[in-house]
Length: 129
Image 1 (tube, rainbow, N blue to C red):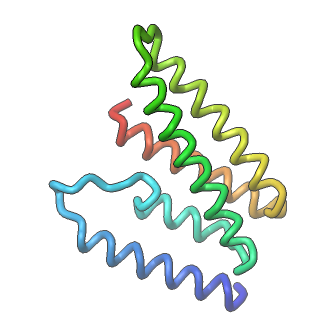
Image 2: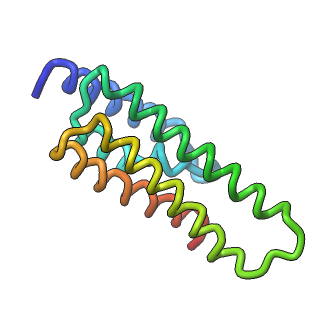
């Protein structure tokens, strides 16, 4: 394991510990801060150059999807809202996948897919799906 990957792993692990000790049962945990999701991110093994690109793609997905859902919720007379939300999420995931494929190698991309699936699972749990 390279020094940058080891350093990133230690930092993410430390952040996870700090977050987990500060959260109480009354405070909901954001899906992207769940320990399983953070561990999956560390397992991608990104270099220091890849980490900002990863954060950018992830932020674009999360912010865009959140905006999509808010827009759908504000619209009048929405029918089949769960299906529309799922379609929006699938489009955002596809865009994120394409972005990640531009800077991750094949081994990292496979680990990213595990990360993505874990993140989406925790998002579903948080949404009560």
